Length: 136
Ligand SMILES: [Zn+2]
Image 1: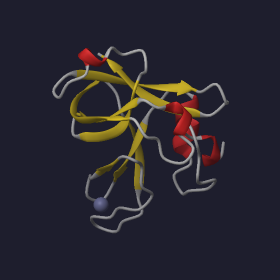
Image 2: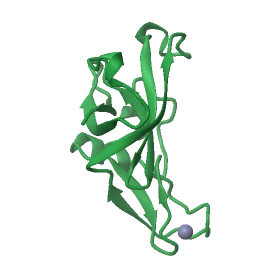
Image 3: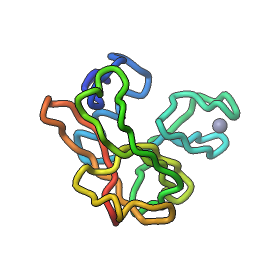
Image 4: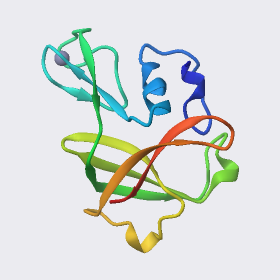
């Protein structure tokens, strides 16, 4: 599956990490981990920007994470104009920092720094795949 299947609006058709989309279609959210230095990357990177190694492995983002920061988007960028409002958050999953949307079904009063969330892969109405956060 190509990277054009990722996200609400995809601006990229090919990357060296398009296996990310295949994992999402199997309900797995994955990051890449450098086999040389151990650094973990999300979004996944094919090359390590710390030690420049190209030997990466895919690791699962699982369990629950904690919200580090979040913001409500009221004015969407190109392609997202009709999708607002939505909430973007940065959450820490055992040291892997994951940026994504919080499920639209989540009441806003349940969203706060320090709250636990789970990440889940989702299929969008237009056939694209993505992921989102839910309260844990
Ligand atoms: Zn490295």
